[in-house]
Structure formats: structure tokens, C-alpha cells
Length: 302
Image 1 (cartoon, rainbow, N blue to C red):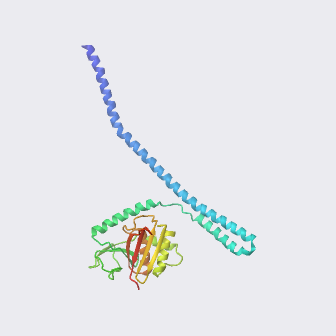
Image 2: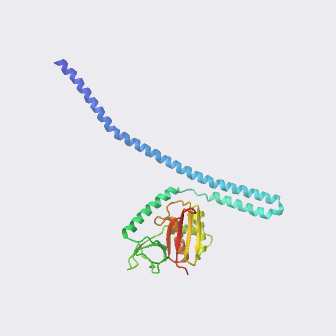
Image 3: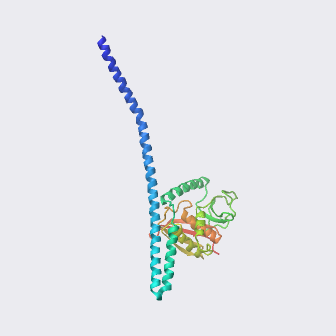
């Protein structure tokens, strides 16, 4: 009997130890998984930082290579001006321009860059939220950019559909924010995406924003491509007598221009509303073979 008791006790102890080890392994498994997940997240964050830094470094390098090339051209032109007297004046001017452009490009190289996909995500969140608000309030799909005092331009979404082809005559001004509660003029207003873009554009604009549709169309289309870099091309077609401007857009940095208050249509419409001092209606549709998108701006002709 004694022998059987002693042999049973070690077996029970072994079973207890095995059970304890199993429990410890089970309890440790989630902790190990959490540690692995945190480690992976940390590695991904570090990799994202590295990629952003490399992207910014590559962009800065591109700017500086351009600056170096301009300086080289400037030096060669100045040297040629010294050696070749008949064309000295032209070469000196060309050399001075190259040197000035190179120095300017080098010192104005941006220190930070925002990737297009980051801008896309930021805008998409705004567009979804604003569209949900507009849908909940039951306003129409009309997008009217209205010049007002103080904020210059507001985006007005009327609650009632207008039969006018271009812009209804009864657009309320000034607009109350954010709700327009006048009978037959009910609607909701937003500060348009294009307002701050227009202010940024005007800071780099030579002279003032134009007041004629053709001038404004040229200025804003160039701004979309050259200054704001929102698209690779923007070609305007102007019919001032009919109160219509259509801009063909290709290579947009932020895609799907038919979304709520997209930066490109918003910038164009805000610029026209501010320049013409008249309400502007926006229509966006697919462009077909010749362009990605067509942005049509309508306003009352004089």
C-alpha cells in the first residue's frame, strides 16, 4: 500500500506541473502576440518615417540639381559674353538670369512635402462628412459659389431646384452661416475648399486677379498646374457671351473631381466668383478621350 501511495503522488505532482505549464503558456500567448503586434507597428512607423524622409530628400535633390544646372548655364553664358563681344549683351543678360534663377531655386527649395495620397485622405474625410450633412438636410445638388463681403466667397447649396440654366437670380446675399432660413431661399453654406487655395495663389500672382472671364480662366488654369500643382494640365474654353467656361482637367493629384467641393472645381469657381463678383454654378463630368474631367462654370453674362 505504501509503495502505491508514493508512486501515485509523483504522478499527481507531474500532472499538476504539466497543467501549470500549459496554463502559463496559454496566458503568455496573448501577451506575446501583443508584443509582436506592437513591434510590427513600431517597425512600420519607422519605415513610413524613413520613406517620407527619402521622398522629401529626393524632391530637395531634384530642386538643387535644377538650381545647379541654372548656375552652370549662367556661368557659361557670362563667360561667353566676356569672350564674344558681338553678342556680349545678350549673353550677359542670359547669364545673369540663369544665376539669379539658380540661386532663387536653391534657397526657395521647400523643406517639407505633402504626398498626394495624404491630401487625398484629408479631402476624402471632409467630402464624406459634408456630403452626409447636405444629404441629411435634403438640399439639392446645385453648387453655387457666391461672392460675399468679409469671407469673399461662400459655397451655397439651395434647398430648392432652380430652372435657370446658369445661376438663379434670387441667390441671397449676404449669406448667413451655416444655414439660410429665408423662405424660398433655404439652404446651407460652407466655406469652400478653394478659398484658401485662391489666397495662396494670389500671393504668387503677378498683379491682381482679372475681372474678365478669359483673363481669369487663363490665370486660374495656369495656377492649377504651375503653382498649386493640382493637375498636370488644365485647358480652358471660354464663352463669355454665354456666361460659360469649361476647363478640361487631366492628371489630377486628387482624383474624382465630381465629389463634394473638390479642390480643383472649388478653386476655379471661387476664383471666378471673386473676380467677376457674381455667383458661379459648377458642373463636373467625365471628360472622355481628350481629358479626364470637364469642369463647367456658369455665370450671368453682362
